[in-house]
Image (cartoon, rainbow, N blue to C red; front, side):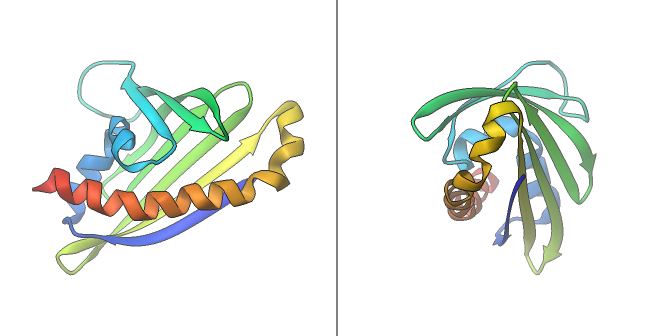
Length: 145
C-alpha cells in the first residue's frame, strides 16, 4: 500500500470547500493526474454517487470508477477501483480563520502482479500529492469567487 498525505489551508469557508470537493468531477481542476472525471449517476451529490475518472500515470491512461463512500459535514471519502488498484481519497476539514485546513490523504492498494511495483511507485505518488497541494487551493478559491 502507498499512503500520501498533505495538509493545506484553502481560502474558503469549510462548507464551501466541502461543497466544491464533494463533486469529484472537479478533480479535473485540482488533480494533476486527472484528464477527465464524469458523473455516472444523476441527482444531488450524496453518499453512493459515482464518477468515472480517467487519469494519466507514467504515460499510461487508466480509468477508475469512484464512489463517494463517506459524506459528512467535515469529511469526504472517495473510493476508486479497477482491476489493478483500489484508491481511497480521504479528505478531512477543519475551520481555520476565514479559510479551511484540509488534510488530504490518498491510499493506493495494488492488486495482482501490480503489487510488485508498489515500492517503485511511491515517489511518483508523492509528486502527484505535491501537485494536488499546489493546485487544489487555487482551483477551489477560483470556484468560490
